[in-house]
Length: 511
Ligand code: XMP
Image (cartoon, rainbow, N blue to C red):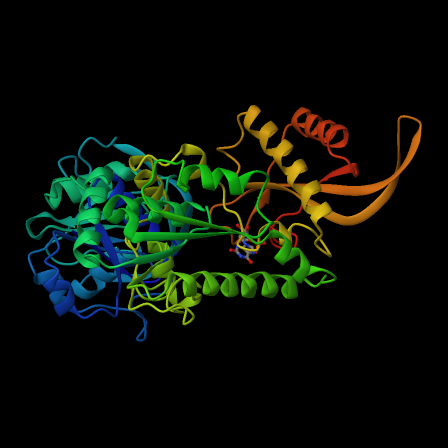
């Protein structure tokens, strides 16, 4: 295992992901974690991340000097590099020239283990206002840039390495190579953390934990709960019951697709309960127009239905959840960046189901690893690579009151849009795209007839974290084709708009 110690930088989860891409398992811990805990984990290497502070300020995050005396290789990145120098007797101060963005780094120490097979001139991503003006005793400078005398430094004898730039960011062209040089070359990790092994080990662990107990899982058809279902089914078969609530606000045919994979005709061994609650939701939502009120009704109705089903099943031993590693980290339970937001998946244990313990088989995985595990388990690619879909579903893509008729319109329009995006080969590069139904009707003419129909809005965004987003520049021909098809094929629509708004000021969804 490699331990990533988090000092609050924005790329910290990325550091861990890159390490895992080298097939080395790693976990993120806050800089507040006691050194005894770190020692007890007996890591093969430690990485100190970036962070927003200046390490020489009195209240800035720091770590005990003992960390560098354990004989365990340490790699400091950005703030982590500066902190390492600061603690070990070097000097860090405000840089005369801030560096930001792609920067050419010149390697000085050709035999450095970090730079093995790395070009002598290599583009790296810089983002710093402090710099290392003097390295600590025992260190030598291994790389520099035009503005920064210490882009990298090392004390090879003690296996301590400092890097001013961000190798975890893709803009650092050879960054993954450098990180793999550290974890495989310096730390001597075997690089055998693979998804097939994860699946096998997790199946074994689930069997041991569950014994002959019963497990209940709310299956939404999303990536996480689907992969959790696949894993649990492989481990315990019919001891698992999945409840899938079709709230009538899913995308076109999605309920049937979920059923075809996990239902009795599918390839998984489990008890599958589909609750067709479409009408029940439409009744509850009748006359409701306020977005948050709709969200609340949809959420509460789900709990009520799940509760009713759970009552029918009776007491279970475990309630399974599809919590994944970013949920854990973002809830402040793992790293440091955390504390900013709390996540609905973690912590708030549902008190409406009679169970003894929570089981979270994906708790250690990043999203891309969850997908790999899904493929490993034989879950269809269509499901594994699904774009995110909000819990309240089409309920928040129909502006104003939700009715069965409006659901039909938006489902059909959305299906056409998705089909054409896929035909154009754009489905992998756009992070989220969908049709929404505006609450606006306008006059048009079709054949020789006057129409007075709805306007559909198309949305497509590119984003990394869904906190900010930009509208995607879709080719005009694609938009045109989608518009034509929607107007010709979907009854009740006579106009199509494309939403250009970025987030902020817009949000990705319309409500
Ligand atoms: P916004 O609209 O806030 O969306 O820019 C950001 C991301 O979150 C999803 N989203 C939701 N997901 N329940 C969910 O489970 C919700 O109420 C909800 N609202 C937005 C949205 O699809 C996008 O991926």
